[in-house]
Length: 165
Ligand SMILES: *[C@@H]1O[C@H](CO)[C@@H](O)[C@H](O)[C@H]1NC(C)=O
Ligand SMILES: *[C@@H]1O[C@H](CO)[C@@H](O)[C@H](O)[C@H]1NC(C)=O
Ligand SMILES: *[C@@H]1O[C@H](CO)[C@@H](O)[C@H](O)[C@H]1NC(C)=O
Figure 1 (spheres, helix red, strand yellow):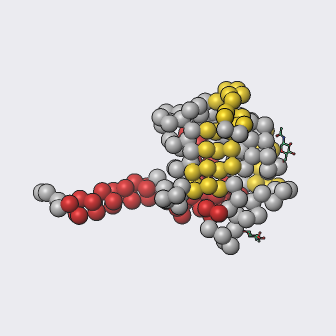
Figure 2 (cartoon, rainbow, N blue to C red):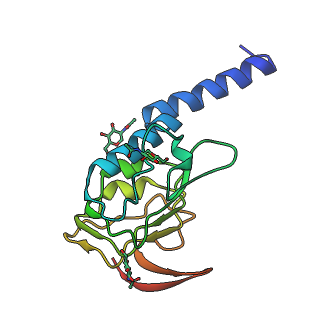
Figure 3 (cartoon, rainbow, N blue to C red):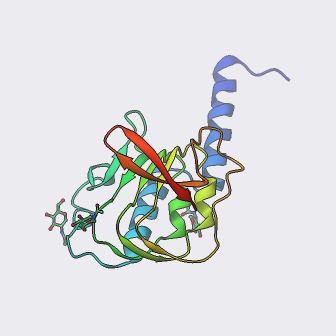
């Protein structure tokens, strides 16, 4: 059976939608993931996450950058924010994430292995935190990954490898 062109387009769109649903990939799941991340923060002395509420679309929350075409989170930058707490495994659901800057906070517990699902991830900056445990994100999926195996410190415009995770 041959499909007409519009039908084929529809089928492809449907399949993509289903894959997204299975892997929890949608704008709604990005918002949920951000709220889960916030819920694991026990102390936010600088109010870094105050804007993370219903008064604004999540793409306008402080530290959150979305792609232009999709309302999907491409960068999370909460460095130097004094955040205390742990890092929610829901971070692994934000499948468009390319950059994570959590450098210089007080995050403890293990680094969620779910991060390794982020196959668009290029920079993972988690140093100067209190992470423990041996949970190392492995990078089986990361073609674009500059170095998920490394912890990176960022300077304006360039990155320096600090240490292996
Ligand atoms: C997101 O991630 C969490 C934990 O990793 C998981 O339990 C949840 O089902 C995922 N999916 C969605 C759509 O939030
Ligand atoms: C919600 O976010 C706005 C800024 O976007 C902020 O002014 C307001 O205080 C926040 N509300 C709460 C309850 O934190
Ligand atoms: C870490 O962040 C705090 C603010 O939370 C800032 O005062 C301090 O200078 C930062 N340290 C480094 C090494 O960037």
